[in-house]
Amino acid sequence: MSESPILFHSPTSPYVRKVMVLLHETDQLASVTLHGVTLTPVNPSAEVNQHNPAGKIPALRLDDGSVLHDSRVILDYFDHQHGGEPLIPRDGATRWRRLTLASLADAVLDAAILVRYETFLRPEDKRWDDWVLGQCSKIDRALESFEAAADELDERFDVAAISAVCALGYLDFRMPGLNWRRDCPKLAAWYASASQRPSVRATAPTA
Image 1 (tube, rainbow, N blue to C red):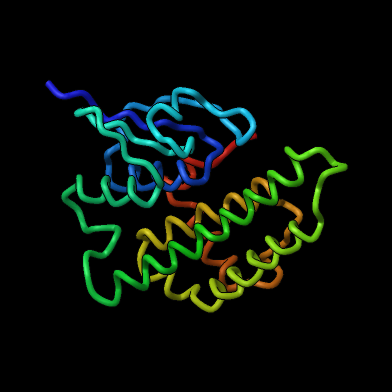
Image 2 (cartoon, rainbow, N blue to C red):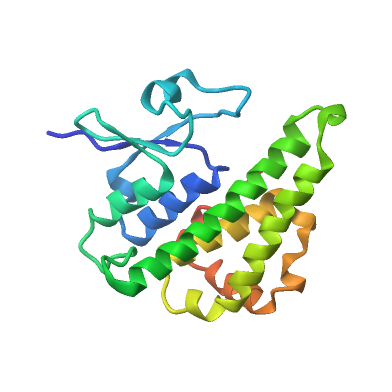
């Protein structure tokens, strides 16, 4: 009898959260074993490093011992394991558009996490304000683009919507003073609705 895949997991990681939302949406949560880890760039996990040389989560160890890493790869893997409508379109212009929106959401996460590292982990006397401003500018540009694409996000809850809802949730969690809703009312309305999905509520990060 094969073992269930093992997902290296932290409830505060927005990249892990994307995978968890998809598992909820596709009713696959029971088929995965969660293995909790805590790590930062200055406090890596030897166990994670053993399976993912980049030292990042999520990482997914399959029953044959092979390991997948990067949330986008793991999302694609799990999207091929269920019998429902794919959450990552398989081909055509829709595929590329939805993956591009998902990539933009990941860019928000990348920038927000860099801000988090700079303002929380780095000693105060070594912080670089211009660096933080540069990352915040990336976030602002991406949110402006998502505001224009809010109707597209509302079309279906797929890889684009999952990625966006997790990115916005992370902004609220780690950058609560950003007040992005003021400048993005359509996006805020979409997020308010999407946040009520059981999969999103069940995976919300807590301090």
